[in-house]
Amino acid sequence: MLSVKEYAARQGISVGRVHQLIRTGKIHADKIGSSWVIDEAELRRQAPLSRPLSMTNSWSLIALLSGIEPENIDATARWRLEFKCIALTRTATPDLLLSGWLRERAPVRALHANPDDLADLRTDARVVLSGISDDRAGLSSEHEVEAYVDPEVAKELIREYLLVEVKNAKSAKNANVWLHLARVQADADGRAPLGLVLADLADHAGPRESQRVKEMLSNR
Image (cartoon, rainbow, N blue to C red; front, side):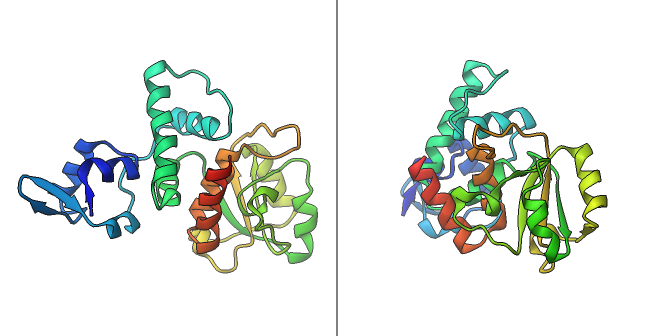
């Protein structure tokens, strides 16, 4: 069992937010004496327990997770984001936190491509591979491509590779291409910032991806 303070730290949210979730029934808790206690099983609840970060804070958190100094944030905002980084290392479900906090970082298009075109798309200089296609994830598959691309360039890629949009994003079984629409600066090795790779893996919500999020956070 966890105290409210312990649960808040594990989930990366405030104590006040936990009490609010208890009052509204979104977290099941038991009262012992004058204090609430929460079963650790509540950590695995799939519904996001925190509001998504603003676009600025999303990309600042991504920068911190990538070892990059974020720009255009004040000291207080930076401290709050550092607390979230710490919370990710303490929770049993960092993938759920990441997918909740960073779910508005960039639009994503789920698409289907001719399997014979995937190799060319993967090596296209206009995309920055991420998520399951990033070599650090150890999950790269020749049958799928995940990448970031400038929104204007995405139109060219969709036309040139005859990509067909698939509804329901990650859950669509016949999607084999995921294009995140954002301009991303690759590192010297041509790779996406680590924070983006972590967020993308978390969004897939599979057991392999979730495990890799934990491992990559502990090793960064």
